[in-house]
Every structure is written in C-alpha cells, then in structure tokens.
Image: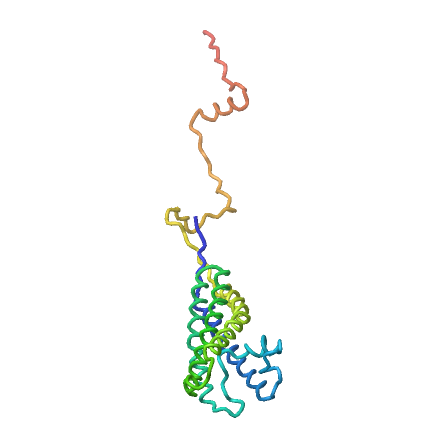
Length: 234
C-alpha cells in the first residue's frame, strides 16, 4: 500500500520569521525616535496609560540613532548587541517548533520572540550603560534593568503572536508531499492492461462427435440415424 509523507523544511519559516522580527524591532525603534524628536508628552510620562503600555515598550532594543542629537554610533552598537540574542532565540525556537506541528510552530515563534526581546533589551541596556559609565554613577540600576526586561517581554508577547501566525502560514506553504510505496506490495504490471479493449474472437474446433453430443445436450433432440437398407434376394 502506498503512503504519503509530508516533508517539512523547518528552516524556511524560521528564516522568514527572524527576518520579519528584525524589521519590526528596528522599525519600532525608528518610530520611537520620531516620537522623541517631535516631543510627545506621553512618551516619558509614567502616569500616562499610552506612555506606559505603548510608548514605553515601543523600542525594547533601542534605536538606530539616526534622528536626534545623540551620536549614532552609541545607539547602533547597543542595538546590534541586543539583536544578537534576539535573532538566535527567535530562529532557534521557530526552527524547533516547525519540525513538529502547526501549534508547536506558533508557540515556538511566540516564545522565542518573548525571550529574545527580553534578553536583547537588557543586553542593549547593559552595553549602553557601560559605554556611558553609568554603572557607578546612577543609583537603582537593578530597577532599570528590570524595567528594560519588562519592556522587552511585553513587546515580545504582542509582536510574537503575529510572528507565530506568520510562521504557521509559511510552514504550510513550504511543506512538500512525497508518495512512498510499500516494499512488500507486489509491483503492478507495466504497461497496465487496457480495460476497455474487447478480447479477440477465437474459433474453437470441436473434435469429431463432439458437436452432436453438444447439440443433444443443449436441445434434447436425438440425432437422426439412417435406416438400414433391405436387400432383396434375386
């Protein structure tokens, strides 16, 4: 009996999900820079609901530093440092999940984005703090670290669900089907016999005496026998 095997290329959804995550995390940082340059009041207001739940977690890994007065090199180095754990965790968890079911793919991409954004956020903050020599000058650094981790986890939980759905769709599109043949199954003849072809008429010759017997058996009539001829004496 032939069966069908579905071959999943797990690296395809993992790659697409990671690249899309990179675009989103860099784009979020760019939006945060624009809002910072425009002087939005709710951006740094801890009492604002929008500032706490939207603007506060908008750029968990930092920004490119292309807008504003801050040196671009400082922002870029911190951002690149935070992208390293983000890329590794998103790709790894999505790849492992894609080797299983669609639900495992969704959960893998979601969990990888959450952990990657949280670890990337605190990594980017540590790089920025050490470059600016803030470790010995600022009080309450542990509280700032926790805030960055919370921002990364919050951003990853929101964006990771979208990345998980994308990974499921890409996995379904990249799955290939392959037909397998059972080795114990006898091979079919080739070329296959024509089913619609009528058999050729063949003539069967009956042996002597056979036709008469077949006729008697089929009709029940006795065969005619010639009467004996009487011979007259001279």
